[in-house]
Image (tube, rainbow, N blue to C red):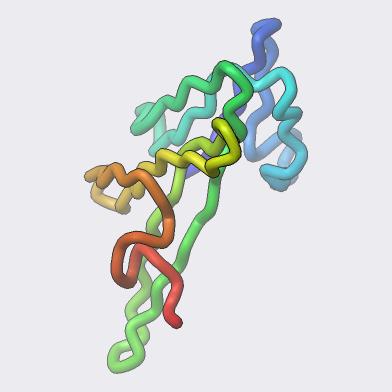
Length: 116
């Protein structure tokens, strides 16, 4: 899967530009309106960012010790400080395009949270 940032002025930033992979840290969060997660030619998830919400994005690779099999889970969501509280909403997108939505990254067991 690949990401695409869509800004409030209509311009876009793709994960791959001119044959180069860009870090999501290149995204200008001050202008970000939508963040898309794309699988081939299909948009799997579109996140609307507004009202001071900041993007959360991670690509988590899980490797099974016994078999060495790899799975990927994409974390896409937002974070905002509201009245001194860190409020989050995160979608966990699996390779089969199924999605689990949670209110925080650290409230679920592995593989959604990092091992302790």
